[in-house]
Image (cartoon, rainbow over all chains, first blue to last red):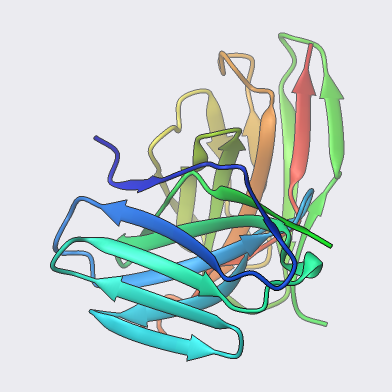
Length: 110
Length: 114
């Protein structure tokens, strides 16, 4: 079993829709959860990070962690074509090692 | 502008040749990393370095080598021993002295070996 599992998609939704991206993880010791966004032929960039369970909101983006079910989500409201990218969830297994999900490719149709 | 520069963007090599990928950062970060990205597999850690003149193997170090002679530079050599070298290679850096410091990535080098 992979330590972080993520549906690779692709996911295609119309502009303005709410997008839900999800990951599961296996180790209950993980505490710090991140979402990276990667545009085509570019490096990933940090989008959001959260500690423990709960929600964190930043503009149109909301990151949610449910530690009881080992489930992390990223919601995008009012999705825009510029949100089309691959989204990678990640978590810290140690101070020097971050484990990434395989990424979900998202396409927003105008 | 602070950031990470990877060069070249595209690299083509014949099987059996060693090739070195460049990574330079001006963020003054102590820690640097090399990841490999393949379709459907996410990012896998090859090597990382927390300080100059020191580095550790990641999950898939076989067939790769690194050096860390300067804080700003962390070149990766893909040797002929790497069985499947064609991939997208990403270099990253972070500040290990800041709690949960995020990774800053370069824009990658796409290596094709034929």
